[in-house]
Image (tube, rainbow, N blue to C red; front, side):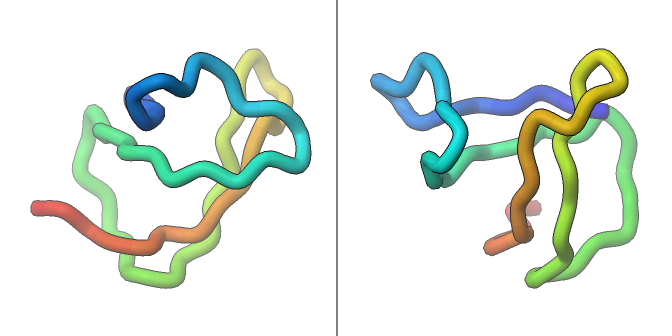
Length: 56
């Protein structure tokens, strides 16, 4: 669980769009660069991606 921050000027991402975003997790988890993830909302998958960079 966490909060997604889209790039400035981006309000919405549509299917087929690619975007770089920042995710602030509420609890620490083990992850590494290249890890695939899914974004879920209300029990539905609304996005998927790959960890490009880990910010400490």
